[in-house]
Image (tube, rainbow, N blue to C red):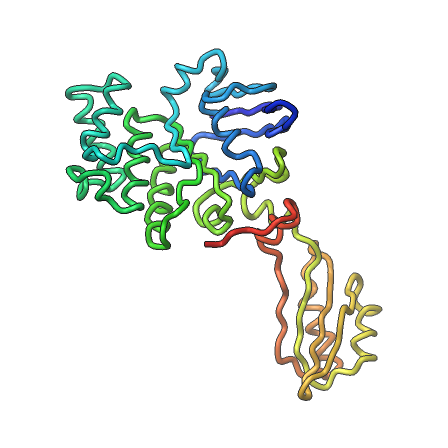
Length: 314
């Protein structure tokens, strides 16, 4: 478990992270979503002990990151955004070198190597030069390196950046698999990737946490009114306006006619689904219903509302 409390980081007069708090539980895959420059990488570096917070605290299994940095780093595997590979080395030699830094040698290394090769799917490239591996495999090698000491926590900074669609699917599947055994905390500015991979989402904007919850919780908490688009025949403006007095909380937004079809949009609150009431009213007034479709708010709409920015979906 990781507990972040009132965490801040200043660079001179620039406040990169502003008193954020959240909790990560064992067995979760949690996404850390924000635009470039929102404070994601700074937060991850503090969580891994590479940066000292200006204020606040981070505790990993009850241990303070500042006071117990060396001990906590044994519990954490960290894959930075710029994957630090020695491309002139063979994959085997690279992993052996990193293991030796952590004093994992001999039989212990053989066991660790077998585990990460199996978990990360590296059997086909283990004796290749790192430089000869694809971007997808290089990312797998980076993951294997971060896991060579079998940490219980993985912190991944933009793990799919620069990968093609097939490689993204492969890394996503790998992260989900690892999440069954470890706490995984991954940052990204790619909304689509976060949605497809994680159990819970934390959104950061300008150094502040603006949302925290499951996909369903965020949709419930931030979704605005429902817009119901209808295409009908034989509806009159009078009957459409009268619906507002007949069904409480329904508002006529627009009504236009094209090629004999009336396109009508109603709005109502998210707390109660009024489609059945609207349908019955339409039938009673002899409307011929061709289409009836609510517009639902998605996570991209929520992200844009919270951060006033657009999301990269590639």
